[in-house]
Image (cartoon, rainbow, N blue to C red; front, top):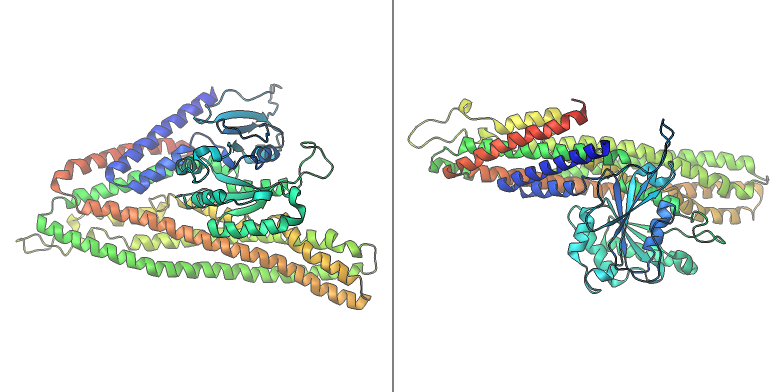
Length: 586
């Protein structure tokens, strides 16, 4: 019964979202309408969806099974041409009544996809993260080998939270794969993209070179995409008999990219805030049009000229704003680098002290593996937690500053106070002009739920995750391990005093390499995060200006149109808030 009510509520919200999108279409707010429809496409499910795509026989189905932790889709060396399969895990817990079993009926699966439900342990990765995976047929059958099917790619991009492109080590990054990865990365509002290289065990000696090549190509085709190693079966074990090596770090990274269950649960609230903001945007523009439409033609023409001058001035301010954002970003990066130096010094000092106590003991030759690498990894995990807080605070502050600047650059009716009606010989009194923009700016400053704020909570969460995603414990171990092997070999060849001095120097290099790698990756991700911040803010700002420019140019014969938009926006706004209030405890 509860599932049915939830499904009906989602249907009502989906219908409401389409009504608001149609309102935006009528008003000419094309960006708003497009954004609403994109967010609505995945509104029916609270799960994070990871879509696995790639060519035939590259290991897509095997990867899905390894991530879920059980065989849920068949693995075949032959190409399949069936529909994509949604693997939807569920965890069964005993209730108070002592009954257990699969959950009751849920909403139908997505159109065009076959749904497979699989039971998983309560504490497993799929149960903890609330993810579902989509296993797709080889993309050679989508539209032909030579060119990517942009329509199919667009559907995948719009309906999932993460896209995983699987490429096989022996023939990694074929020309067709490169074309599709580039198309995915270029798609508007593309979800996070990861390239997973499978079957590395079959090319042991060449694995490192293959990964370097894939990393280079992906950095050119899709700079924000991650390159990850696929799971490798444990030596001497039958397929499926044990967890493959490397599957846990892969799960951790994909879980970060997809977002935790709480973020998925908040999707409904964010979508309703977007609908409310769109209604307010249209209503505000309609009020401006209704206030301006009665002006005589010469005054209206002059008003349009003044408005366009103000718009050009606002565009110029973006040059200054971009420079300011660069300073904000640089300040954050410098803060993180300074903290890294402090933590790096402390970690190296602690490791040196521990090593000194272990000289000429049986533990000395195992110091790197048993002490240095775990301690460095732990230090970096603490650093990650610190970075999370630092980035969170910086982005929150910088988005507030950005919104404040944008609001100051948007004129209200005071812009037209110098306009005189022909023959009247006087200026229109300011008291007679509605301060639409001023009121909107004040409201947005107070509650941060207006048109420019409706996307910020999701952006900030996504940005923080994108900063930390590449930093896994396995990567730390690899960085420290490479230097550690050389340290052990060299240190044991010398006497105690010289051995201690050389070891301490090498320990410092190990820690420095690990922290330097982390800071470099973090800096690159922060740059991308701020680029996204400016891009999305500018898109929203241009939407506001386009809609209000149309309102300023409104003709008397459009009076009924704008009045209809105003009334519809108010009606829909009440409906949106009726859905939103129970969720926010109002």
